[in-house]
Length: 463
Ligand code: PM9
Image (tube, rainbow, N blue to C red; front, side, top):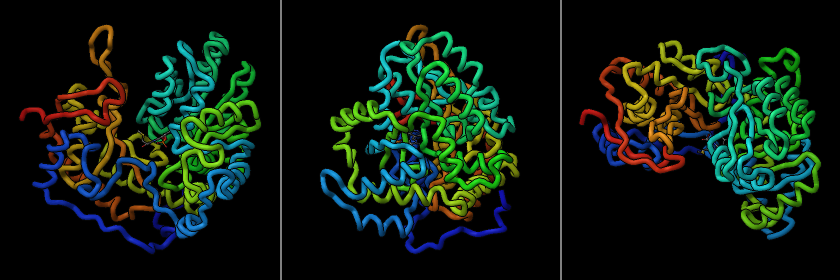
């Protein structure tokens, strides 16, 4: 990766959206009224919003121009055919099922393959993927390599699936018990960590040796391709699109949240390499839940923006700048002693809250406490990936089960913030670090049964 100061952003800014920082007293009041859950804050009350990189990209002039060419016909919109051609070209997949976003593609895929008591292995399923597996009373199996769970390991492909464990599961469970494999690239939940080409190739060999399909959760596939290009000498001089074609050649299909690497604000799809039977089955579900096969819950203009965004998202200069900015923030935080998951990932910087706030035990919600503190200090919205998001109350014992990691994700929207915004985030951490022992943690006052982090309520401890 070239050093960040040897180049500047590969775009200039044509339109701006004003943002402002509320006063400290107002921020304190707003976060209290939001029950110390940043999902309850109004976006206008936030200065720098690092909640997610999903659907938050700035579209290009080219994408906006394409929106004007939306063909809003119910059936056979020309924008569908444009997107189909882009998917065939970039992914090498014949069949396309557009959906309103990524989780809708997951819903269709799981309804086709997964039933009660089955297991669905992968490296580390994203929350919505897990949700769809569990909804069918099946079990998600996260088989990421051990290094993937070690926040300090410098392994270059921490999103890799543990092939030995995968083979063990495939041997022990026939296709009636283990119907498919899903690999998420990059792997969101452990820090936007990439999956290597070798790992995908070998996972594919195993899947096919045992007669199971392999799917890729492709939300951040272009960022994964960039890491392969930068970190695997075999691919150093290969264009991103060639890397993508090879990557997808190892799978039988993919789910895609276009809200990430297709640089749009809404949309998704399911795609199949060549299996017409699967495609027709998927279309039945798509028509019930999403819309006709040529729009899948999206407007023609959205399909056009996705088609154009898919190409922009694989441009070398764009990816260098994108991953470069995330790395810029990560390195600056590491330089001032903030413990982050390393190597810095593709779409965000993941701070280890257990190490940053070592005086807080997990039942004090250290990651959520740091999220709250970032808002109180500087109007920054981040997101908790720790006890609140992944912990749960064991229904049998009634005991709290804590996750192995307690992280705060600073997720960087694409083409939205400048490096000066990143510098402001670093300054906020500096301030908080100087008084961190005064942070007392949180106490839960309400939690829902599933996906509790979206609606959880807290109060500050000691108040
Ligand atoms: N990811 C994220 O912030 C959106 C918030 S959902 C709680 O990281 C992967 C790897 C994702 C993902 C969404 C989806 C679902 C699938 N796979 O949001 O439905 O990171 O388009 O995609 C979010 P949709």
